[in-house]
Every structure is written in structure tokens, then in C-alpha cells.
Length: 155
Image (tube, rainbow, N blue to C red):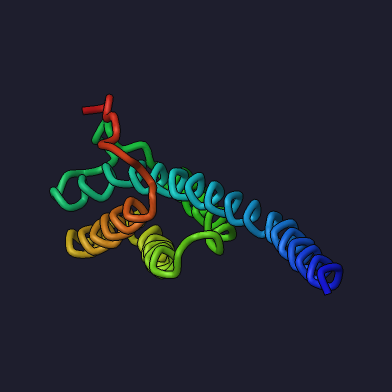
């Protein structure tokens, strides 16, 4: 009887070890996805912050083309949208609420670009897009975008 119990114990230990070994790739995959999500959040935040001076100029009623902080010409806006499209392709690693806000930001920016090019984007539209950007940034911060206040050398 002792021998049978020992084999059962050994079998249980081996099964436990096999399960742990089988779970290691899932754990590693989770770590990789978490790192990818953090990297993506940083790149999205950089895009959001780069468009902010244009939106702020429009909100303040200034001609954004003559604001030295604004870096977007019509061609640059197309590049911005193209870059944002590339980031959208990676969004599956983000949390669902981040994905929703990113999608909302993306569609609003896409619809906004022709209005900016035609100098028809009004203050209310720019404020709305900036509000979505702020909500997206805050949500990304909740999931680990930054652990402290960002250094802002441009201020």
C-alpha cells in the first residue's frame, strides 16, 4: 500500500509541474502584451500631445498657421493621420475602454483634418477633440502610461 501511495504522490507532483511548465508561455505572453501596451500608450500620448498646440490655437481663435508651437501643415496632418492609423492596428493590446476612446479620437481627427485644411474647424469642434484626447490620456495613465508627472521641457 505504501508503494501505491508514493506513486500517486509522485504522479500528482509530476502533473503539477507539467501544469506549471505549460503555463509559463502564457505568463510570458502576458508580460510581453503588457510591455507592448505600455509602449503603445507612450506612442499614442506623443501623437496626442503633438496635435494639442494646433487645437489650442483654434480654441483660442488664433491663426494656427502663424503660431510657432504648431507643427502641422496640411501635409503634416495627413502624416499624423497615417501614423495614427498605424497605431490603431496595434490597439488590441490596450484595455477595452482605451480602445473605445482611441477609436473615438481617431474618427474625430479624421473628420477634423479636412475642416482644418479648409480653415473651417470651429472652437467647439477643437475643444471636443481635445476633451476626447484628455480622457484618452487620463485613461491610459490609469493603466500605466506614466508613474509620475512628465518632464515638460517645452514649458
